[in-house]
Length: 85
Image (cartoon, rainbow, N blue to C red; front, side, top):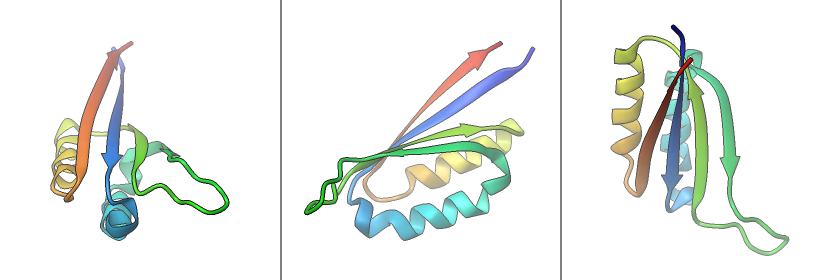
């Protein structure tokens, strides 16, 4: 049986925490299949909050470590969905 794991991150204060967030994603880059970023943007405004969806693969311990580091970011809310296929 295979599974698909999606980690969703609501990143508040996105402009202040994006460097820390990106460093974590780089550290776990081999475990991230797909990354989708969603935030409100227009010509004059860049939203301070954003939602990032990560399709992750690998060992459960590695995924849990990624989750823990994301949760440690000030202003981050992390949720996970696991689909058994």
